[in-house]
Image (cartoon, rainbow, N blue to C red):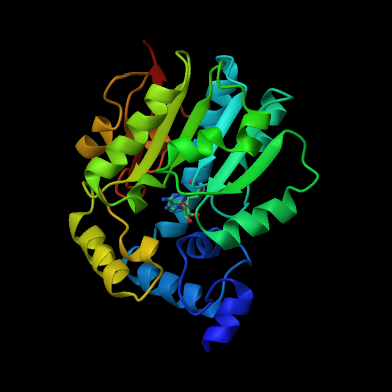
Length: 273
Ligand SMILES: C[S@@+](CC[C@H](N)C(=O)[O-])C[C@H]1O[C@@H](n2cnc3c(N)ncnc32)[C@H](O)[C@@H]1O
């Protein structure tokens, strides 16, 4: 891969990207050989990863439907990933027509791809930004044009804080949004955790770090359930609190995989001041 080609494309397809590996696990086509190779290596250690990704999307849809049911109509999806099944605007607008969605990702490929796919979608914008910079995001003209910050907003941090490895930085990012939005706003977090499978997850972390992948992949971090609970400091957790994602408000008849197969937790907190 010569530099010129990477420069021409705006990214280097020989470097695995988290968003494209996730796309591969979801059965998508927006991934390259390097992404597939890294993803297959991870599957050797954790064959449940595609199940986890699918459960993650089901959980996200339940969270968004819950938020529309309590009156939220504005969503900020931070680290949105490549468009896939059950995108936030589809779920939100099906449940509450007119819901507005801002998609944010720091991967330029995700931002470009999403922008092209959502070009004619009403009430939806995409921006390329780092979720840690809430002032930039909330002050962005396209965000301000769509989201009324005087009204409640749902901030979705779905499987993205794991890529903000520094615990203080991750906590500061959550607190930044918590303090910037009006009461009645919600913050939802979903995060992989090491508790049920400490050995496999430590092995995966080693692969991430040595993979030569994009910095976000190399630095991604698994936390414990207790670490994830701390992200809700200063918020009122809605029932059932922070739980393994299949157990977060499952719909009647939905199957519940065991935590060992879906080692990720999620919760939703309400801003009250
Ligand atoms: C595992 S994907 C999750 C996608 C989606 N939220 C979901 O749950 O299906 C993580 C996404 O977060 C993005 N990301 C990682 N670090 C980020 C950051 N600091 N700011 C914005 N996006 C980030 C990655 O590019 C990737 O698309």
